[in-house]
Amino acid sequence: MSIPPEGGYGLRDDSLQQDVARQMFNSPSELEVGMQFRARTQAGPQTMTIVGIEGDDITVDGNHPLAGETLNFDVTVLDVREATAEELSHGYAHGADGHGH
Image (tube, rainbow, N blue to C red):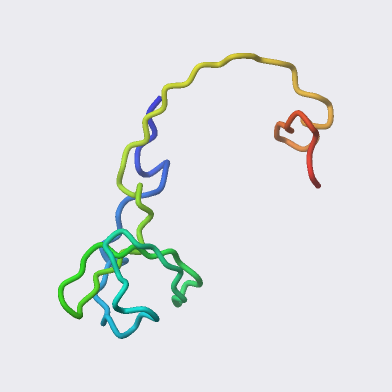
């Protein structure tokens, strides 16, 4: 089974990548490519990944790491059962121990 980017984590958005000054970070000397952090943006909190370091310029990316990727799954169905009346009324399957709401 394959899911195209539009059905998964979306297409990459180049506007979510930008350069920021090293001084913007709490621990500027400890930065490494691949580190992630939460940033406050105009759209609310967002996970950012450091994708480049050039001197005092830090390139950060707000895209999900799998944005733009086709997701491929190899799935084996091990069992199938009838839905319970409660699951049908809620519109989704519950786990073995019921549900938590």
